[in-house]
Image 1 (spheres, rainbow, N blue to C red):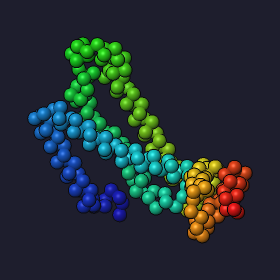
Image 2 (image 1 turned 90 degrees about the vertical axis):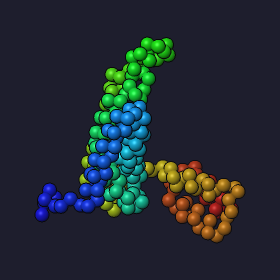
Image 3 (image 1 turned 60 degrees about the vertical axis):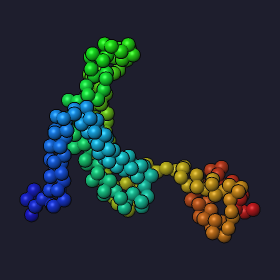
Image 4 (image 1 turned 180 degrees about the vertical axis):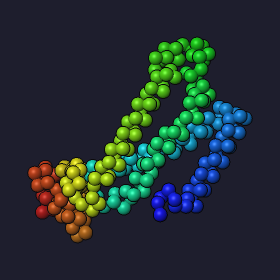
Length: 218
């Protein structure tokens, strides 16, 4: 059975119902109090936008660093990142409420405020729409590239096998090792075993390697 012919899952139906109810509630609220309604909508939109953008950021970090932690949550992150086009589409109602949200979008407010007049080159509706369009294009391009790289990678393979970047400097490992090498560290048997494990994963040419090795041999 094709995906198009498959019945809509109950959760998706509920989501559509909630979305429709929310749209009706927003329309009623905007009729009663435009400013408050658009302020509330902007707050919710930023929250929703943060879900796909945050997922894209975490996918980018995992593509760069690798690790088993990312394999566990990669599918949910990828699903959340796919919501970016829908999140951007939800910005359309806000375009009708710019004057209710921002003083610089109201000509009378700009004419009465010397500070807004001085910043008119940046705080203008046209430039606001232009720079946000640039942001959207960049975000969509990042999401597309991450999807493309995701299809090309092999789960469980090494970073080099997937053609992804390898952090040879081991920033996180070095940071942990530096903390472990502190003169005030409690050198218990367990702490020493942990440090020896970290030492084995550091680059021998690194200055931190010789520092940690000295503390362990002391």
